[in-house]
Image: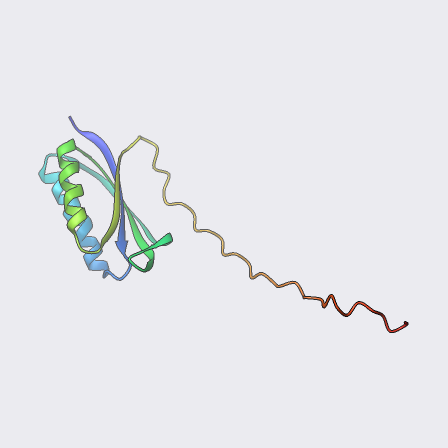
Amino acid sequence: MLVAYEILLMLDVELPEERQEEIVKRASDLVKDAGGKWVGHDAWGRRRLAYEIAHKPEGTYHLLNFDAEPETLEELSRILRITDGVMRHLAVRRIEGGSPGPPPEPEPEPEAVPEPAYAEANTSSEEE
C-alpha cells in the first residue's frame, strides 16, 4: 500500500545547481523504480539557519512529495544520510492540503539606535 510522504531536504549552499538537481532526480528515480508515485518537488531556495550546522549559517531547502511503500522511504532516507552535500533531511507523512509552501522570509530587524549616555556625575547647574 502506498503512503503519502514528504521530505524536507536541506542541502549545502555551496553545492552547484547541477548537483542539487542530481540529488533530487536520484530521489525521484528511486521512488519510481520501487513502484511509487512522484508527486512533485518544490525548491524553497536559500534560507538562514536558526543555528549553524558544520559552521554553515545557510542551507538550500527542497520539499519532495511522493507516494511510496515504507520500505522505499527507509531506503531513500539511508541514501540521503550518506550523500555528500545533504546537511539534513526530515521525512514525514504528508497530509493532503497540508503543504502551504515555504515559510516567509523574516523581515530584517531595523538598526537599533543606541540611546545617548548621560553622565550622572555632572548634574550640577551653572547657576550654583
